Amino acid sequence: MTTNIDAAAERLLGAHADGVPCAPVRDLITTADDAYAVQDRLTERWLGDGRRLAGRKIGLTSRAVQEQLGVDSPDFGMLFADMAVPDGAEIPPGAVLQPRAEAEVALVLEHDLTHERHTVADVIRATAFALPAIEVVGSRVRDWDITLADTVADNASSGLFVLGSRPVPLKDVDLRLCGMVMERRGEQVSTGTGAACLGHPLNAALWLADTLVRVGRPLRAGDTVLTGALGPVVPAAPGDVFEARIDGLGDVRAAFGKEAR
Image (cartoon, rainbow, N blue to C red; front, side, top):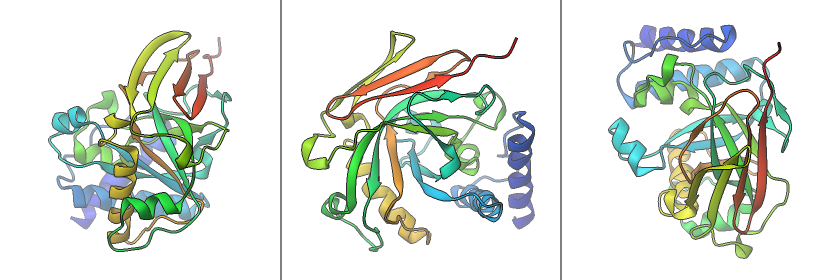
């Protein structure tokens, strides 16, 4: 199986390097444990290349998407510092393969979360502030033809992320009831609330904190946590500009550059 894990990692790394989506990796791996082993291979390779770990993303927080992939829990992936895009800055064409945009609540930590089992109070106490975010997800797997094994191995289909610039303390916002509207070039394309994210974005963060302690990569002070989509994910094309507004948190923009003529 180690050989298969290495082969799956190399297939995905090749897609990263070449900018050409690859075949799914589920012919090489089948279990979630194997998929996370592939993700670990990618993470160690990238850390060795000098990339800096800046946080984590949570995926599969929607019950509908979980049912589609036949799972009953979220997944997670790594956020690296070079994945962060300033609010409204242009994202170059091809920077993310098969990009899609989704609006999320981001939490930025000021304390480590290293207990074997955390409480919501632990997460609140560890959080410095919240920000609105747009995650630009992407898939190195051709045509988004993914199962759970494919997306987990592919770093939870991570791409880039854009954070708003006005930090909001948790005491000043109700993350469960906050409404979200995302527009593309002024047209409404996605709506939702914090309750769509495992019932509350803090529930997602709690799941992540406990899970990462078990796998030996606990959340640390300074980490950014993307807690999961508040509404439907939307395909992105060159020239698209997305603006997400989240009640109590403000707005954030993701702008996709046009293809060169």
